[in-house]
Image 1 (cartoon, rainbow, N blue to C red):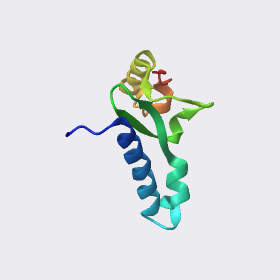
Image 2: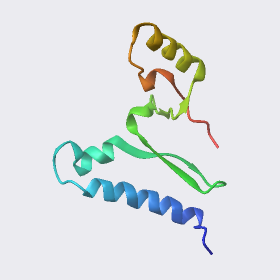
Image 3: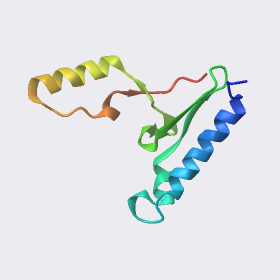
Image 4: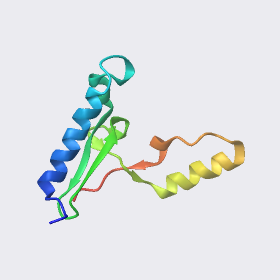
Length: 98
């Protein structure tokens, strides 16, 4: 009784994106800007979950919402050595298909 159905979770995520788009009618947070910046990146029916991600992680037609830990460790060492800022896209890995 207390656990939503998968279809309800997907519908909620879609409504959430729509509500975010409706928050501000103009400027960088306008409906089109929010819709362009965040989308559903992954849906996993078995765990009844939906991942909403920044479209910055949608690279060449594929979502990159996981972490490439080898690339992250290299970026971290570079940061520790010379304070080069970490760039999340530098160590983003492709989202696995379910």
